[in-house]
Amino acid sequence: MNINLNQAEEIIAAAKSKAQALDTKMNIAVVDAGANLLAFARMDGAWLGSLDISIKKAKTARYFDMNTGAIGELSQPGGTLYNIEHSNNGLITFPGGVPIKNSSGEIVGAIGVSGSSVDNDHSVAEAGAISIK
Image (cartoon, rainbow, N blue to C red; front, side):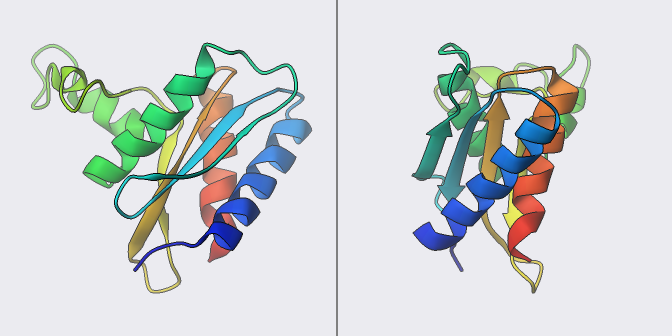
């Protein structure tokens, strides 16, 4: 299963709406089930440095089918995934990446968001991820 461009655009719209509600500017990336970039939006005024981070968050969430914040907890010194962020040409292991599931619970892609606090990044990503159920 995979998401299509129309769904990716709906996901971005939901994420942008949440970012506006939080009064923040975000970079929002959506990848398909193969972790290929499907759609991207940089809100006016969003940090340029967060562009790459949002894409890597989306890819990281899809590569491991879990929220990037959960990977971050496992990748701390002494953790079972310590140093994983150095694999796959660089991963992002802090909140803001969330797998996207269809109505059957199958992972069909992922969203990555960057541009604010990690709590806001995660909230915006989550709003996008749940929008296509």
